[in-house]
Image: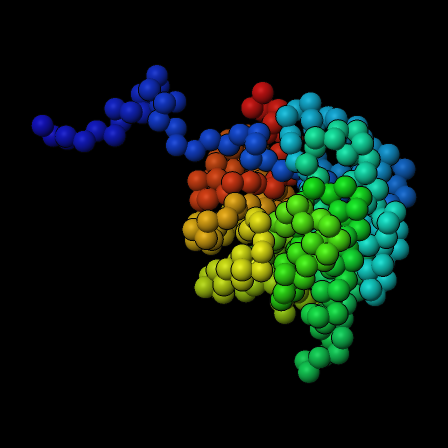
Length: 324
Ligand code: PBG
Ligand code: ZN
């Protein structure tokens, strides 16, 4: 009888929930937070309506608030008082991320604190490490910057970070951080590697938020060319071999093909719905051109369907409230 296969049979209202393949849950979500050294009150991020740069004094309350909404993990960024050429504030014992980590763990010990491990918020030139003069002019000094990453990692873990997330895209970063952590007795601390990070225009609002734009050059000598899918796969494969515990694809929505491929490597996989993805949705929603709730859930569901076990998203707390 035509048509023999009727997919609509399972789409009836009462049956549909039983056949839902992918559902975003609270266990998938990680909330990014910015803390500003020396701030007295929260400062709005103009390009990311609804997001703020927080003073350290707010850390405990934010953690309790997120915990009450069912969020299990936060992802920390710091904005230091002073920046210099070698990112000294990134590994200071009393650095802003280190202090925020302590405050959050003291307020909510079970909150998982993941720290972004990079130098660009802390360097005066805005690049993700230490610079040197290369054959092409000023460029990131890979091996000198690796030592810096070791120092940052140790300082963050000593402050109580549960997971470190290197985002500098230096060659050898995972291996060298693993080595440093193990040597210091932190062999139980996982590394969530920004293993596949593209040189994307979608980080624009973040760089406003963190005052971390580059003063010269760009990040294309260390981040991946958006058209290079095979290279993106190799980057994640390398990080797996170097000992990464979790791989990450960033940005998320426009790199789902890459995410699906990297998922096949077998490691837990994270995706970062970055600042520009948030801002684009927000801008359209504020204009009432798009239904915010629907598009956020659709995009997060698609990111999960493509292979993400974890999603870092500025919408995490909103979603937690919508799901409640
Ligand atoms: C630091 C870092 C950046 C982001 C996460 N970690 C900025 C960058 O690489 O320029 C971007 C996050 C976002 O856009 O939400 N290297
Ligand atoms: Zn960086």
